[in-house]
Length: 422
Ligand code: LLP
Image (cartoon, rainbow, N blue to C red; front, side):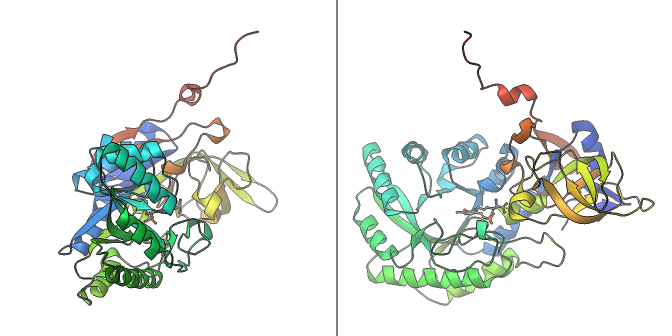
């Protein structure tokens, strides 16, 4: 389902023409579809219907309060990696009791706040962290639920920067070393072991690496059972990919989780396990796009550049992962001449591009839509080159809501100060 359909050659966000939104709020702007997020979440809900589960949306994918609120209203849990994300969840009406806390470097103050709010569990990534959580929980007179994030050493076959499950990645605890960590955790008075966790990477477009990792986790669960440690849940992380290009066909949540359920149901020792998932991209990416205006067309001897008003500070994925995103005119005009061009921003970096070698029928002043930008879009934006971060807008049917106003120049230096005179 496309939440940004084309009608008579004109792009809409749900029921609203994108041109109207751009006129009202300016460009560049992120435009989200409420339905897109909701349906993204519901695809997981349906896939897990009838099996005990917790869907923890990975906040890093898109942490706008309105997005978190829309998901919280549907009963979502959240996967967080910082106290900032935790406070966002709470500010957006999410429940702490449905939060899992991931990340290799949780600080003591973050651990304390999570304990204070009563999160569902910590996904621990090292023994040092386990001891730290024990100390903080003891000092607060609390018991912390933990799950050990193991590194199953499987190749996610995705971009190296977003692959996390190989043994030379910084994430998780080597699966072979995990039983000793569980043994220690079980001995600690302020720790309750509740699960096992893994996240092997992002933008996976086949099921095999997931199933491989799952099988390794289940072997570990068996080993732990023999040691007298019975797990309540199995957290299989996030990572399900989306179709950035039309020829890509990643598994659907139903397809992927259907196979996970089959695996668990097949063994009486596994069939009690609650399934926890941490999807980010597969819920958020297709629910958003970035709309930008063509500033000018620059033609050199051997190349044409469509220079737009969005840049790598607004949308970083093409620059750092060479990610491909669909780029299309908001209003199609077949009369225009087709141009083979790179779509670039005004930033002083060769890596500042949104797309390369695109065939576009564009002229100065046109609006372009950069698709599949709802995940890892605004969240990775910055003020590089002293550019103000874009506005964020959420469309709900025929209603348009500003969910983050465009940054002002004075916002950028509001927290900076000059040296004293003299
Ligand atoms: N759980 C953990 C522990 C994670 O580290 C991540 C993502 C997720 C869940 C969600 O993964 P997803 O379902 O979104 O694949 N900036 C990169 C993606 C980095 C992902 C980092 N971890 C990008 O733009 O592709």
